[in-house]
Length: 239
Image (cartoon, rainbow, N blue to C red; front, side, top):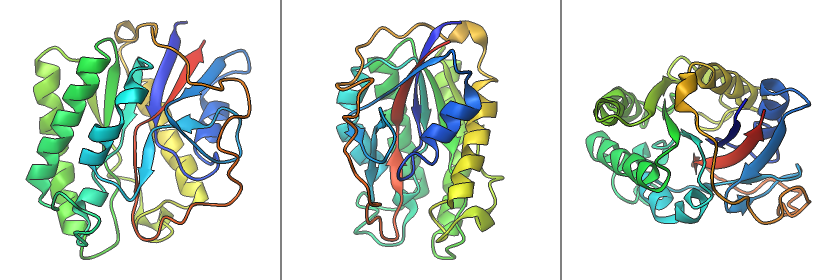
C-alpha cells in the first residue's frame, strides 16, 4: 500500500504512539514519526504538540511540521480553548470563536499540505463542571466547520470522540494510560474509514534523527498541570 504520514495525539513517553504503531500496523510496515517536537522513551518519538497551549498557538507553531508534508493529519484541538482560566484560554473561551480558529487552522493545514487527509476530532468530554458546558457547545460546532471545507472539495472529515467516557480521564482532562490506548482504538477505526482514493504518497522530508535515538532523551514526565496538550503530531508509514 501507499506510504502514509499522519498527525497523531500523544501522551508522555509513547503510551499512545507506540500503542498505535503496534496496534495499527504489521512488522513489515516502515513507520517514521515526524514533527518538530520530541520526548519520551521511544525511538523516533516526534510529534507537534505543546503543553497548555491553544488552537492559535498550534497555528502559530505547526508550520515547520507541515513542511514535512504529511498526507494524513489527525487533529485534536480546543480543550485548552474551553478552559475557564484565561491564563490558559488566552484567546478567550467562547466556543464559536474557538471554532473559527479551528477552521483557520484546518485551512492552513490544507494550504501547506494540499494532498493531505485531515481528520478533525470532536474533542473528548471533560468532567470539570466549569469547562464541560463550553466543551459540549464547541463539540457541536466542529462538524459544521468540517462540512464547509469538505463541501468545497477538501479531504477533511470530522471524527467523533464524544463517546469517550470521562471515567477514562485521570484528572477530568488527561486520559489515563489505558485511556490513551482507547483513543488509539478510536483513531484506528477512523483511519480505516478514510476513502482509499484520498490517501496519496507523502512528498516531504523526514524529521532530523529518523531511525536513531534523537528523541529528546526525556525520562521523566513533563509537568502539565491542569491543562491539556494541544496536538498535531506526525508520523510516516510505508505499508
